[in-house]
Amino acid sequence: DVQMTQSPSTLSASVGDRATITCRASQSIKRWLAWYQQKPGKAPRLLIYKASILERGVPPRFSGSGSGTEFTLTISSLQSDDFATYYCQQYDTYFPTFGQGTKVEIK
Amino acid sequence: QVQLVESGGGVVQPGGSLRLSCSSSGFSFGSYGMHWVRQAPDKGPEWVAFIRFDGTATFYADSVMGRFTISRDNSWSTLYLQMNSLRREDTALYYCARDGVLGNFPNQFDLWGQGILVTVSS
Image (cartoon, rainbow over all chains, first blue to last red; front, side):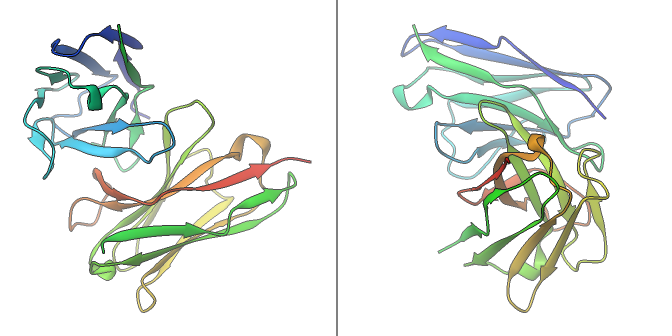
């Protein structure tokens, strides 16, 4: 299985800050990577797929980049609605795998 | 309204069986591959299984291979997960999710249900 490792595990930030989350794959996954946002008691929500394509309805303050084994999710200016847990997911193989998550909390 | 609604969860003893259902509406169910994804308490999501849009191909995570079976009935727009030989570590919130690409293999998950809880306990 392809292992996905996110960093940091927790990110403390304030409204208006720029937030950056990194996701590393144990082998090259080309650009077959998605990012999700999850709030307590809710299902994950797709934000970005194919490393950098914004899902419809997702605010443009979210952006993704990277290829191969290293990827980044950036929130350009944190809003109160963005405090949540974020997961990366690879789909280069027939067996998708997720990262362990990054919780973005209010400083 | 485009949505997925899971049902069939509950409490089951170790070694027992359970069948989950996922009813879809608002989109052409038979055109999409579908997944089951689970999430144990305070853990990240774990992909469980995928079925191709026409049901002719399935893929499973190693952790459930040989115990779980994914299936679908396109005439009823419904997805199923038959879970046998359940273990305590199968305790989780189970989501059905739509594949985001009209293709034959797993991709991103672009539509999720609200989840259904399965608890394996004696």
